[in-house]
Length: 400
Ligand SMILES: Cc1cc2nc3c(=O)[nH]c(=O)nc-3n(C[C@H](O)[C@H](O)[C@H](O)COP(=O)(O)O)c2cc1C
Ligand SMILES: [Fe+2]
Ligand SMILES: [Fe+2]
Image (cartoon, rainbow, N blue to C red; front, side):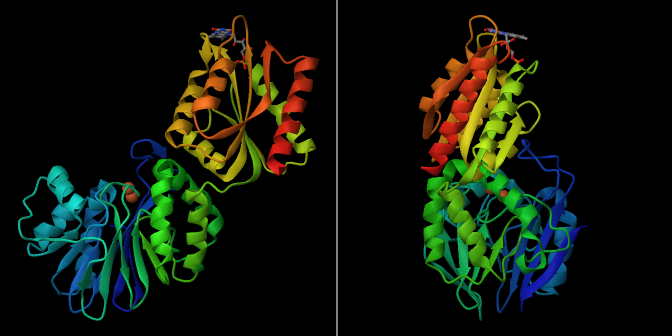
């Protein structure tokens, strides 16, 4: 029953739920601080519900919907995105308001039958890019944003109050802890969780995200209502700028050192390297043990900083399995505009550094640093000097 309902502007209601039970979003991404699913209701001559929430939260959501409708019937349910964290309660809403007209694009229509197995018949209004739905004082213009996050994804814009219903775009992890609006909260925590959401959920589709942002930038937006996280009513420009950086992989000076190590030889190299980076004046250096920190956090930090240095021990002639998982994640999300350094340790015939080098040439768009440090067992004086050289090359490349 944890639906939070707040009137954002006159006759525009926020109806979001906080999910602090789910451990893994999409059964993959840790949610230590939860996540919110946001829905919105416009009450005008016609009433329109903008998306729903995950089915596990249906009870509180429906109570809130009835409260805000205050005896009116629901005319439209606008479906911006069919992923079940937002489409979960469509069936229930239809049971309650059998005449409700579902509004979506052609792809959404197909997905409604595919996923919900319901006959929508005439109760569907198919909208194309640029179509307008009149609600009374307010109206909605639809803009397709394919692949951000799914093929049917679209946003809608209300020109009178300049509201953008942005679905997954501008969303983030993190439940809303009483504060809902950008002007009510400290953005630092959400910034990390937004970038983690972006890089892991949308990152692969950054080209499409950049296109979607161009469309959004042509609109005069005063309020952004996304389906996860913060509602931006005071400074929407801030999150638009932040997203432009994410989508174009515009990053900051800093280095993420990630290592995979069983007995500490590779870890020791990571610590030495980080010290040398600090001596080179690099202020943002973050070290991660790939076996300890979930990939989603590592990817998010890599999205933030321009430098990446990957180190792996050799395991059965190959890169360490947990590092292999990270390489897969990096490849999947098409890392661009980064500088990459490589190091590793082996016992007899090696293999890890060779695979890291193969990854460097095919796993993304990297500038690869020439000094690659590979030690047999523990790092000796000459290896330490090579690590110093690698740190110097990284610092130079970052400042070039
Ligand atoms: C289970 C296991 C498998 C290994 N497989 C290989 C291998 O196939 N080839 C090789 O050169 N070294 C292999 N090694 C040796 C390690 O790569 C070497 O000891 C390295 O220094 C370990 O680094 P670490 O202390 O960071 O874990 C293996 C070590 C272990 C424990
Ligand atoms: Fe989604
Ligand atoms: Fe979502």
